[in-house]
Length: 113
Image 1: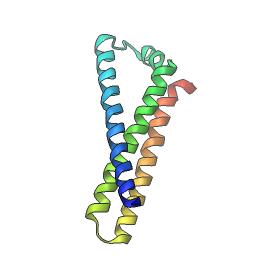
Image 2 (image 1 turned 180 degrees about the horizontal axis):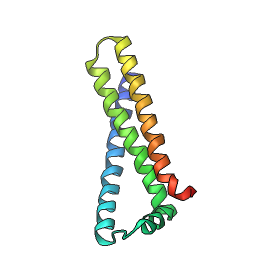
Image 3 (image 1 turned 180 degrees about the vertical axis):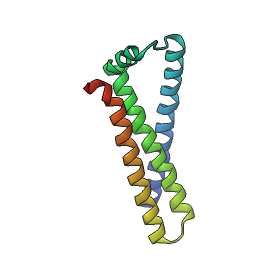
């Protein structure tokens, strides 16, 4: 029963993150088509808005979670050797964590100046 619940949880996470990613991507597309930032100051003002900053950070978290669940399922299904699967999952986890911290640093850098 726990395997079924684990599969259901992964399926729900994948769908929930996909919905947020798609919705926020549409929001960003419309926002930047209708009111594109003209210079660096406009970008900083956009990110300085707490609603935009939180939305962007949630987007980053949803993206990383979406990638983790998707790749994890592929690795669990198609890599038969446990040590190799464990090493690939660890490499994926470290890589995603590094990308997440890097993106967070990029998002937060203008606010820390």
